[in-house]
Length: 616
Image (cartoon, rainbow, N blue to C red; front, side, top):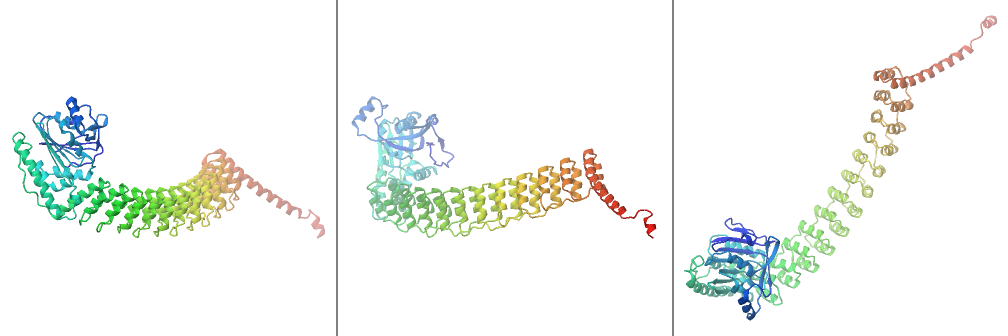
């Protein structure tokens, strides 16, 4: 018999059997012989009077007590469509050849409601449901039941025998509708929930299995010839032998389903079941947390040696109920992992965070600090920092700088372990936020390195530069002067020169000449330490920019000689040659005038011709 998985929207059920065909819409239903269907959809209990049942159906409905329907969400061409169990099952039946029989498993919440209206289902069908009409199901249990049924090629009756103990705990029901006759059998976990000792369970399960054997044998005797594909095996009259672990699984499943369907009568049943040792309570605890049921939660936490898992702690944080979280933490000896603390930080609830921080096992790691900075909640960050003895790493400080929130940054800077490194200064400069940079500089005793200052010059922000220049450790190196000249921003260069006591070297002046920017050159020339060398004059001549050359010549205290004229002539630039010669001529004239004056003075001191002879 072909097996088909019908999945609805938002269902994560895994299908690892390649022989099972998976479909999503009613249009994909196969036609022909009977198949075994596994319907996993989100379902809800629904009360209504259907209008599409025909006259006879309406008459029967009128005289029957009102019972619920199963409303299921399925895929359709329009997206998601709600459909009643009757509609879905009849669609399957109408696609099946007459006298064939389908087996249908429904794993949804409230699946038992589908058992109520088999009168209105056409054809032959075996319907299996896995909870009462009033109860929700659990995705994990639905997956377990599906896997148990599909993991091998066993027949339906073999599957029921092998898993009978768990089916009892699930309130499993099975109905056979054959030749318009309906035969139903339902299991109930109610008595299990009232057992005070595990020793009572085997006898109860034997009794229930014996009743099922009788039910099945009666149907088998009547229909095995007509429907051999359904009744092709006699049932084993003895139930499967169960271990202690098997029996514990029965109680664990019953406990889980009771917590998921908690009502005013549930607590006493749960307390009774908790008399058994070795129950798995994790799922029940998480459900109690999700629903804020502190009474149930404390009951479960007090059970035996309950160990609170990290996942459970995460759930309590996510819930955001302080009383619930404190109850979990009080019972927990589980180490608070860094990612659990991250959850509390992300939550953004200060009371929740403090409860986690106060747990004895909480240790703050660097990436928790990073997370608190990233979230940007000052109160949350301060709470983390107050509890932290972890050194603030440079990359954590970088995170605070990148965040761009002054209050966040100051909180990090004020931590006793914070030390500012050179690349933190680079990061603050790079970000370009003056307030952020000033805060870093105020807390910094780290020397401003030349490459830090180089970063500022590259940035080209005058306010940022001035803030760095004003730091007590800032010393301008030749490299920085060269960088400022190369940058070509006059305001930036002037700020550097104003703070600089470093001598302007000839190669700095050479850079200014090469730059070809008159304003930049003049700023360098006006610095008190600037002295023009012959090399610089030659460089200015070679560059051939008259304005640049003139500025150099005007500031020069060196004599323009024949070698300079020769260099000018080599440029073949008449204007350059003329300008150099002009300054050369001026120097020559000045020199000649000085010589003439001296000569005249000497001549005046010589006696007139003849006067000296007479005197002799």
